[in-house]
Length: 178
Image (cartoon, rainbow, N blue to C red; front, side, top):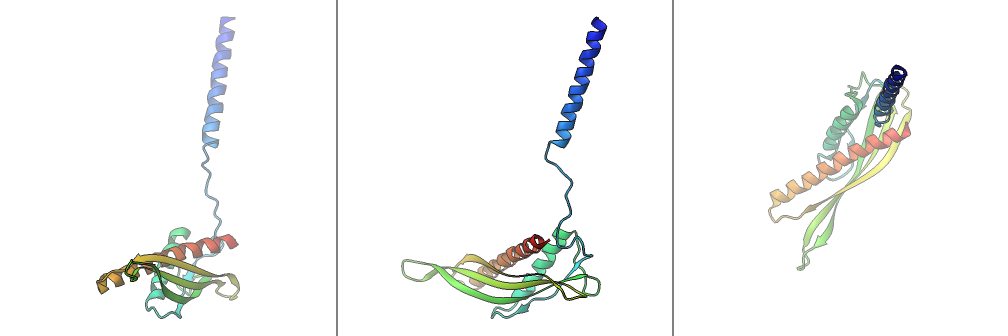
């Protein structure tokens, strides 16, 4: 009788341990990442330099670098040259504007907001079929500085931050389509 009771306790403990292990492994919330994104079905994407219709030089180059970095990071390096990629990301920098957003008590500008508007298009390279197209706007505030070099550095940093966020937003919007 004691032997039978000891065997039941060991069996119960083993069953409880197996249940706990199953719950621990299966219930922790970790799941394999399901590949779901704009570049999963294609071998890669080519980022074509955006046309710059704004008065600010260098914006399209900065945006292109950010797009290449973002797409390479998010897709596992699927940014390829034109002759190898199945997809193509093109676009236009529609505008760049500076808007004063705050003033001092002497009515001089204290802070600007840089506003960058772009239109981006993801195409299948061979068929030229549009997979996604969108207009996006991003803005970033920066302080006024009496030193013109520091003022230009602040503006350039604001543009870079806006380009980085635009790249992230383009990736997110492309992924919504899939």
